[in-house]
Amino acid sequence: MAPTQSRIPLVDLAAQYRALKPEIDAAIQRVVSRGQFILGPEVEALEQEVAAFCGARHAVGVASGTDALSLTLRACGVGPGDEVITPVLSFVAAAEVIAALGARPVFVDVDPLSYTMDPAQAAAKISSKTKAILPVHLYGHPCAMEELVSLADRHHLALIEDCAQAMGARARGRRVGTFGTAGCFSFFPSKNLGAYGDGGMVVTDDDALAEQIRILRVHGSRRRYHHDVLGVNSRLDELQAAILRVKLPHLEAWNEARRQHAGTYRRLIGEQGLGGLRLPEERPGCQHAYHLYVIRSAQRDQLASALTQQGIGVQVTYPLALSLQPALAFLGHRPGDFPMAERATMEVLSLPMYPELTPPLLQQVVGELARALGVALSRS
Ligand SMILES: *Cc1c(COP(=O)(O)O)cnc(C)c1O
Image 1 (cartoon, rainbow, N blue to C red):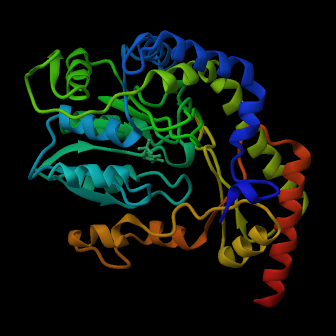
Image 2 (image 1 turned 45 degrees about the horizontal axis):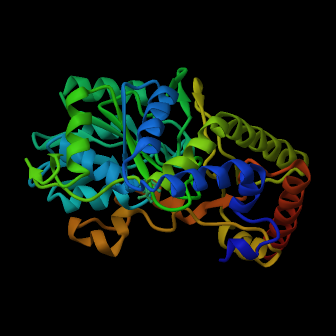
Image 3 (image 1 turned 90 degrees about the vertical axis):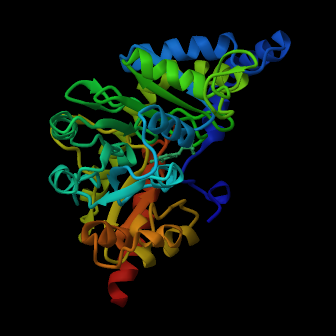
């Protein structure tokens, strides 16, 4: 699938750039003229602005969302022999970094309404080796944080939120990323707050944890060429930080636009009387960030190919539960171990979702969806 060639793409990053071009171009010029490119004043300012946005004491910029997870796990002391509880329906990053540290990702099935980790099943997976719980606010929907916070507290576990898809989402009025030990964000270009390259951030209220991540991201060094621990090179660069500082003040309005589009999708799909589709829902007290707008249909594959043919950008997020990924076969899972997630992977379909969508564009998407669904149903 090539979203850039679609009539209505899955995401449209060029539309956002057009709207902010003078400010973004000026920010890039400012950095290039200053001549400081790694960990300078833009990164420091962005860290303060993100901390304030989230309502956290600290924010630490790193090279990617994946590194935000990896460095946070390391700073929490996760290592060989430990277990980390995490959802089986997600992007691979969390499972990948847990395994890379020599720990074991212990998968939990998802709640079929929100697609986020089921807290009751998470509780059942806690063992004497469990070191941390790592929930994912999948598609932008906040996890059941109250239950997960009390579970982590009861068992004295670190609670690390993967907020890569949910920056700005709230649960009970509070921003995701601030419920547990730390929150990890990604600035991958297509995320709700996207850079023009890779980038990530960790937010936390824990002074020692923030300091540890600051050290790990620069080769384990507090003072240049003096290394207390072995770290990595995982820094956010000044150009990305300057670009993100232009965008951050718009994030709240962009997320609000996404929520409005979700409402419009629901209304239009209802008006068309499209049966057999399941639409995303918000758990009470939650504010979804709609990183993705994910519907479900038993005719998913037919819908996906029909919509793609009509120039509508769609995506299957995700086609395979993590338990069935070849790279994680060493965990020994089999089909059927996680029925909710496995069924979701056969039925989910992401429709175009970005702030710059308009009601006429949404109408076109739903029109094509109705057509595709009519054809699919007449054949089945
Ligand atoms: C994008 C994403 C990541 C990884 O972020 P990168 O910046 O691409 O490393 C991690 N977890 C989830 C759920 C993601 O969607």
